[in-house]
Length: 208
Image 1 (tube, rainbow, N blue to C red):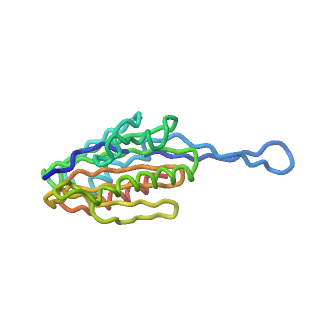
Image 2 (tube, helix red, strand yellow):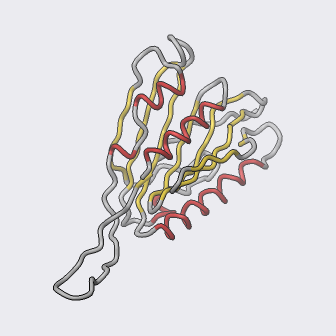
Image 3 (cartoon, rainbow, N blue to C red):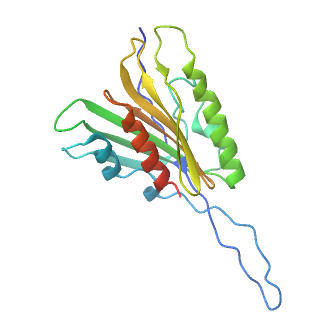
C-alpha cells in the first residue's frame, strides 16, 4: 500500500489599466499584469474555518522559485515548468490541528500570474491534464477521486479528494484559474475530503 506524500504547492495574478494619450480618440494600451500579492493566497481564517480549528493556524507566505512539484503524482514537473521562468510565483504553507487538538493537517498553495487570461487558462488545462492522470493508478497506490467543480463570476476551480492505497481519505487537490491568475492547492489531512472543496472555493475567491 502506498500513501500519498505531502507536497507543497501554490498561484499568481495579473491586471492593469489601459491609458489615454493626448487629445482626440482614446488609444487603448495593452493591459499588463499586476504583481502577485500575499493577499491573493489563502488566509489563516479560510484554513481554520475549513478544519474547524480551535487552535491557531500557522501561515507562511513567500515568493518562490517554482521548483516545488505540482503534485506528488506529477513527478518532477514543477509550477515553473508550466508557467515559465519569468512569471512571479507565491507559495503559502499552513499547518494546524483539526478541531480542538485533533489530527494534524497541512495545506500548501502555489499561485502564479500569467501575462494574459489566455495563458493562465492554458496553464490551468495543462495542470488539470497532468493531475487527472492520477485518478487511474495501479491498485494499492494512492489516488485522486472524482472531479468536483467550483466557479465564480470570473474564475473556476476543479478539485478532487485524495485517497491512500487502502482507501482511507488523505485530503484533496485543487486547480484554479481566475483571469490571468492560476494556482494549485494541496490538502494533506485525514477525515472528510469536503474540506478540500471548501478550501478550493476560498482560494478561488482570493485569486483575483
